Image (cartoon, rainbow, N blue to C red):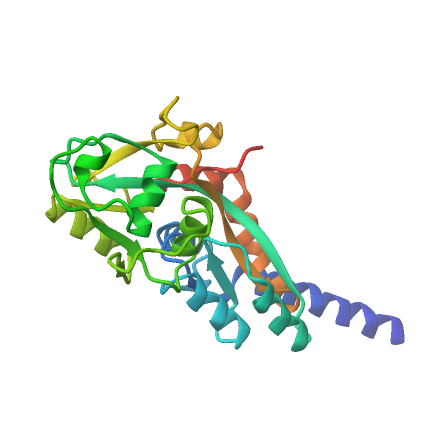
Amino acid sequence: MKKIKTIALFGTIIISAVAFKLGDINIKIKGSDTVLPLSQKEAEVFMKKNPMAKITVIGGGSGVGIAAFLDGTTDIAMSSRKIKMSEKMKLQDAGKAYKEVVIANDALSIIVNPNNKVSQLTREQLEGIFTGKITNWKDVGGDDEKIIAYSRESSSGTYEFFKEHVLNNKNYGSTVLNMPATGAIVQSISQTKGAIGYIGLAYMEKTVKDVKVSYDKGKTYVEATVPNAQSKTYPITRPLYYYYLTKDAAKVKPLIDFILSADGQKIVGEVGYVPLSK
């Protein structure tokens, strides 16, 4: 009799696990506006394959997502930057073990208004523009016109990545205009001839112009494209992250496994990001 009870209990565990995997998935994802379109598309396709699953995706910036992750109001934090040491310490102090997963890669496009004749810039020139040392387009081969630089706001992982990898950790200039979302940067630059900004590759539109970038002091200039990002010839590339608590691994695993699968990485490329190398 005892043996039969054991078998019955084992059967219940299997049924519950299968039901959880296929049906009772309810996941909240929050954070990076860069990762937002990708997460939305991956969630949409995943829910079509698993009709009873519910996935909510909200933007707001990498910092916002990781803050929500720290206070337990999201299951997954999406981030376009690596988690900071201060954030790691908060998790450690709270006794919360976490996992980091790279779900895709991205390239940062430098964009200007289509009427701007400048089509290439060095890293040093970009540093000068965004730190406020270069204020006129004539100083970088353009017309005699004031430069209006747009950036993401400081809660954005893209803001921090650009500061570290393009500005060499120098501070942004006081005249740089901080925008709450990437779409706002695209719209502003499309309407302002003297404007310049940076966006994730997937946000690139025909209303703005991509500028080639040189990281070897002007010897070679490279365009921001998926192939150039995959080959690492384009210099401003970065990983895109998901963070989740170890205790939630079983809950989020079906979604993450799907994103990392061949089908999920195909979506990465279709949306405009850079698939992971196999």
